[in-house]
Length: 173
Image 1 (cartoon, rainbow, N blue to C red):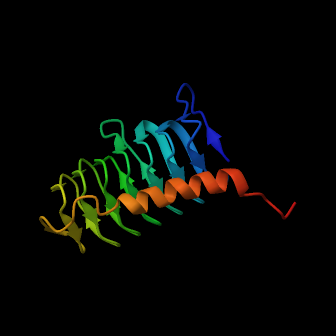
Image 2 (cartoon, rainbow, N blue to C red):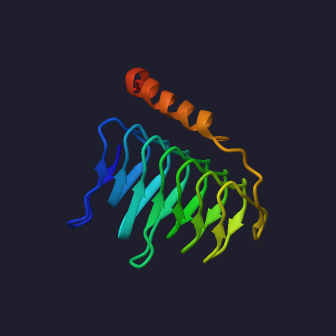
């Protein structure tokens, strides 16, 4: 897997995390215990910091970036769907970020919230706990997500990470 230092910026990946060989990790990136980073995901911590919590899944094709003034943080027990783009935002614990969504600078996605597939969350938006942010630009529906709604999805990817770590093997060489 391509994991790159950039000058003094060196990724820190928990040994229990699974990073797919086709994911790219660059610079100031921290990945927590039992988290999974899937094929073609790019986490680029060049001018700022990216922190991925424990047991969080970053799906295929997702791009996570930051700026010097806006780090990107994704909490514990989150699922970030395929082809999402997160930049300079904070996603608290137990959230679901839908496939193809865009979450931009200084956005805060509070604990247990959902950003819908293909939603656009513009700068400086706060999504309350257990709310849904849906559409382009997003509209927020408060108290729309049940407590623990994404627990099983997050645990599924923890299990997949263990499975892939132990049984995935390349067969075309």
